[in-house]
Image (tube, rainbow, N blue to C red; front, side, top):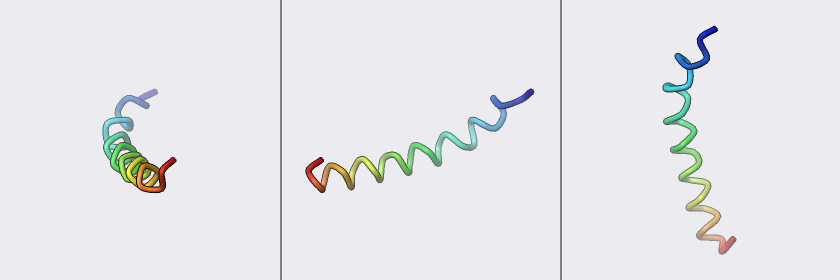
Length: 30
């Protein structure tokens, strides 16, 4: 049981992708 060990390396990638998606949606006027 060590999902916490995986989270730190996955989260930064998730947030960078999320940021790009938010910028794209914002540009589209959503």
